[in-house]
Length: 195
Image (cartoon, rainbow, N blue to C red; front, side, top):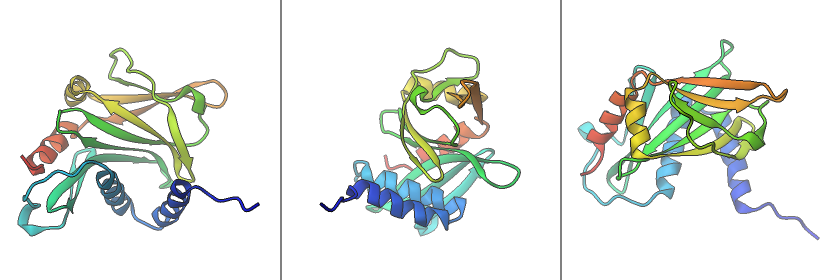
């Protein structure tokens, strides 16, 4: 009996091979394109500034990446952190929703206990609900973090988002994500979004 690989896994394997050969900026744009390709379409006739089909801007520690979808900008903000050797340590990409909430895709390194998931918190505030890892790829493990509008406001005024995990030896580990430039990046995405 022939064993078939599910289409979604096959697509992930193919994407991973493509991503391994791409620069970080192109990966961010690809992820944005995929995420917005799966999201409901916004019907609008606006375009990016100066008729551009893509846009990439940096706001301190955050990047804005936009592409065109159905003649409307589809934007995401992201932050990558790398080790001194250039290897990616973690990545965060966030897409805003019309109701002011957001969804963040977290890519964290191997060597963590997957069953524990990721427990985020802003600065020293109480932790948010933990989220489970969805899958692991050769580049790391992915978790999707839904963020309500109230938490987006806390992120705008905070200084860091902490992503807490458990390492293999049951050792707590925290990955700090700088929020410098976060609010400006969100403001830019809002300015580019169709009304």
